[in-house]
Image (cartoon, rainbow, N blue to C red; front, side):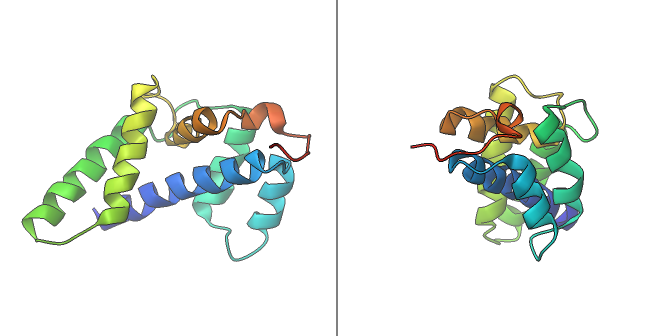
Length: 133
């Protein structure tokens, strides 16, 4: 349960950071290299971002799994009177991805929520840079 909470949060945080940098005009390939070579790098970063940049959401882990697992974690936390606000917000992001039709897509498809909100397409932005206002 703790593993899924941490991994789910990390997948969503990875998507959010990449979307923010892309919205700011950074080339996603450059963001991947720079953040991947420092303290922000992780297994999640290294395994999800290349597929996001390629627009490849073929399932490895799926959005529906995180919906289920984060829901279980929130139920357990409630029973323990334990606040888990990051897990709760992360579940909402995976629910939003499912609402967009990505239930069976790779969990990295949570980035599609951020892309829609920001009006960006990370795969289409790869290899390009320029500030977006």
